Length: 387
Image 1 (cartoon, rainbow, N blue to C red):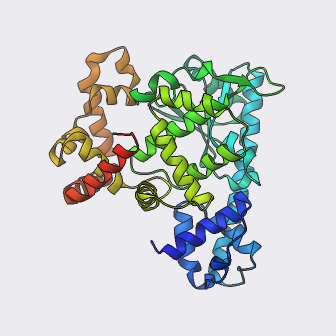
Image 2: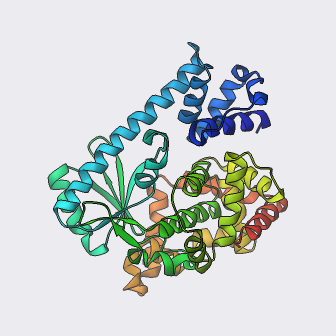
Image 3: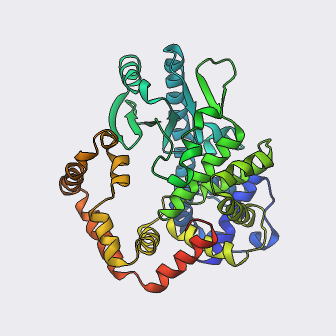
């Protein structure tokens, strides 16, 4: 990626979110000439709406086509926020009325710390609930709000409003990751009431911070997490009152302190204009290459190294371990003997649910992956404490 575009994008994010003035060096660059590339790059990281705000503040948006695209992303961000916020309010009221305990997660909490709540975009609404309440939640959301239950995958229960807002109720947080499992499974021990509510909770600061870092680590291990989690991290460091010792103690217990410190350094590079070091430069390349949801190249490189080569990686994708399958099919927790049947069921899902094309593409990426790519990715993960 062109260095000028990277510098311009982060300068504009710093202006809008962090309140930092754009440097004369950036102002002197021919920004209008790079707007098309800046648009594509920022949109790939779901940052185009923030860039639009920054460009508008500097008077760099006009009546041309690319300016219209930026302005559209800004309007869409506002619309997405209004739609999600409306659904969030309705759901919270119903759960409160029905005396169902629930914990707000991710963007629903984070956006209050942004200059404007619409600036913190999200694709869905996330709650932590207790597994014994899931059936009641299905019933009351359908009867009172006409929100439809869609599916359950692992410990995530998906619902959609009539307007298309996606809601996920988690009955466990990242249960497949044994490194963080003990802490995240005890998330209910780290909650506090939302003001004037009996059943609505939020995580304590140290648990919210830990969950944020753990979620970042999960995505980095699977191909990348995009820019937004690093911006959230900067905000959690600078805009939220906190006890750093309490945060770090929990990270240490979950073996995530090394990763968290690395993320803090890259966040400082991007949003405090700190100097790069060798590790942050490698992290930047990995994260920016991966886009907002990570990419297949990064993910395959990670998994090849973990599995011990291309052939073992292929076999691991065809035959999932029991530990992986039980996450996809929780029935195996009680009936382990069903493992072969669930394995076959997964194969049929790939064949008949439109997943075969993406699976074949993954195998082609696996075949073409160079040893250098694999080793460079593995080295980075070791430095991050994620090997």
